[in-house]
Amino acid sequence: MAAANNTSIATEDCKSHVSFHLLNSESRDFLISPSGNQVKIYELKGKTIGLYFSANWYSHCQNFTPILASIYNQLKEQGAEFEIVFVSSDEDQRSFDEFHGTMPWLAIPFSDLQSKKALTQMFQIEGIPSLIILDPSGNPIQTEGVDLVYRYGIQAFPFTAERMEELVAEEKANHASQTLEKLLATDSRDYVIAQNEQVPISYLVGKTVGLYFSAQWCPPCVKFTPRLLTVYKNLKEKKEDFEIIFISIDRDEAGYLECCKSMPWPALPYGDETAKVLSKYFNIQGIPSLIVIGPDGKTVTKEGRNLINLHSDMAYPFTEAQLLLLQEKQDEEAKRYPKSFHHVGHRHILNLVSASSGGGPFICCECDEQGSGWAYQCIECGYEVHLKCAREVDRDNPEKKQVRTVDPFCACSSAP
Image 1 (cartoon, rainbow, N blue to C red):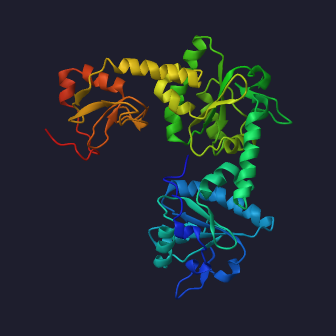
Image 2 (cartoon, helix red, strand yellow):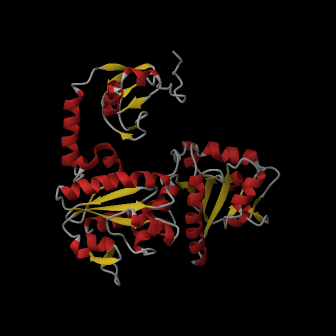
Image 3 (cartoon, one colour):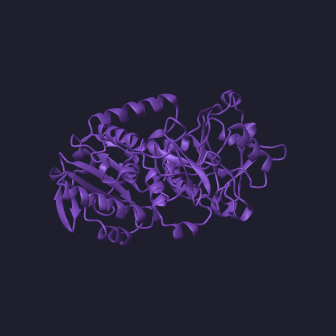
């Protein structure tokens, strides 16, 4: 899953020299280790520093912290001059101690609210987890450290602009030479698994292939998999050259096997390191995720999940040309819809909008699914529904309309 509301670009003041006095206070010249020991701030001199804004209560922070810890420990083993300082947004000392205990790095004491507030304001932290990278002179060089860690892992160090340029160039070269065999095969494995049988990867070459990153423990995955299964079966009935490969993010083999029971398509073997490699290669930050690979082995889209939510099997083969045709069709259909209508459940007038007239990507408030482009929208509060959902509401019988409830989360809803 992706970081919530990641950091804004630092202010001009941030771009100037940042001295280490920001890490101390009038009464404190030290940081604390997870065991509670004091470490003098001057010991960080000459090191690249990551300011890690995080909190125990937020699941995205809990998910990211072990990833960052693994990279931190590897860098320490290599002798890298790198340190991380935890800047807590925890609600109490107990939560702070519990969370910091899972980290191998230093922290600003929980009680030092002034220092934490100053750092949060200086770097304009709008969401967590957030990782601000300071060079050995104390100057901020990266404000999107979380994304860089997810994307490049340990290779991102030392996070300099020069290093980022090298990684981007390497990434472009890898994607330019990408093939399905390079993505899925290893020196010891040239197959995937389907019903306990080996399917040669060569059999998949020339097909449109969806790489489905999913897990049994993930509720959105459990919800999306049946929808993907329907699309898969529809395309198979149409004799389309489409296949899916399950890339497990499960925490144990039992979860992996449970997922496989509901999936008629092949999968990577459980525990195969290729899953981690592909997750990093495609910068997977949240699941479920569907990466679509074209017949030529190149990436068609990383938005397969959203496209299926929007267009079902009509999204196939997920190319820009197909999406353009779907958009043109939707534009034509929208002409037959009224400019506005009274939504009984919302109890307001909803107006027809397009991406160019106030619409855009949204989550339908009627069916709770992805939407994009045309929608019916409440101008006052942004309540939006799919055109198809609006049509279904309009077809409801009068008795059903009378029992539809007011949306309790809409600020402008009112009782009749």
